[in-house]
Length: 443
Image (cartoon, rainbow, N blue to C red; front, side, top):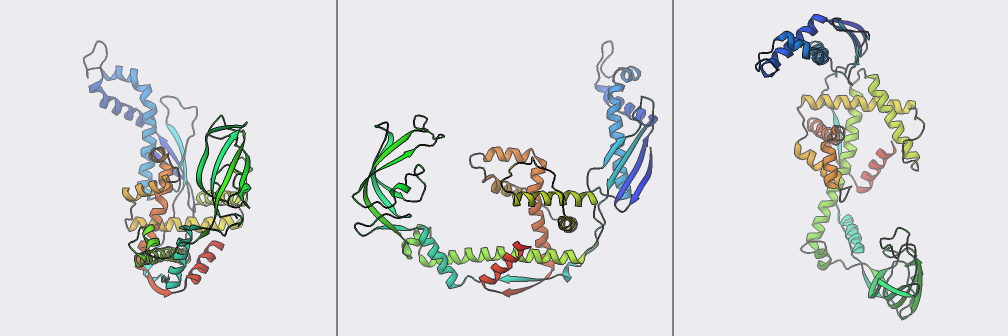
């Protein structure tokens, strides 16, 4: 076999590979010798079929396998000897298209090599970690929000009109074409106006009613309504208003705490403080991660595979275009040409991606099966009722597995680097942390 370099510019590589007819013939013979003990043929005992007959019978069929294996072997040996790692799958093409059995095989191979990543002194990286304590004011604010979600209702003054957000207690009877229908009646039903729990238009017509009032509400069932005999039909509901109640926040006490699974109010406050500080820590980590990536980006410089940058720039341009045009939900649109800004962002992402991959490999960072399972479970929650199908889809889709694995790997590498870096803590207010997060989102 003969391998000749034809291109070596930057990270671009090109080679001509010649596999001789003799090498192919030898490979075919090896396959036949390996298979001979198991082959049976009429007139011969098992394993005793002559090689010449086997070659005549199976040689042509094995030639394609031999050719592929020989070329693959040549490529693997080249990468082993050269130390090159292709950025993407190498392009391989047979150049003597008029090839016939007995001829040598001529192949062109081209690829972009991954660059050599320079060493980075991670201990010289300096980072600032923003620390926010969950003070009493923040805990009280969170408590008030909880009390509102656990709101109660109390009767309004007699004669008061119902407002949006009020609860009306009603008896109602629904009729279609003058006939009451099954499931269309109830007594003492507590309906919150604006909750959209009834047919569209029903609640709107009860705004302004008073206790002891009787009101007919006319609505039309949606065309896609679950009960076919009611779909698209107009219905009249005769409603008797028994009470009009206004929302009031639940009292902040031990009873409220127990509604949320805490033993008492003190325990609920402790839980809230812990949750708030976990949220602050997550936001702080996002700020520090960006600072770390900025620091690493300034510390390294190396050639980037043009194809990777181009693909990343196109993906960025496509994603941003869809964010600016949310009404377009498919991909039937003209190709989005990346701008200079997209290309710069793509270069940064590719550079940092290659650097983090190198750091992770050297540190032997791995994503465990348990971490992957958790990631799949988290994603599966977005498809209620179809969790099993999603699991099966991920198991059969290597690209999807990589999409889930990549951010876990990146975060573990970031944690590894942070452990080595010089990190100083700075206590800040919740508002200062929020400004730092907003600054990230604006970039």
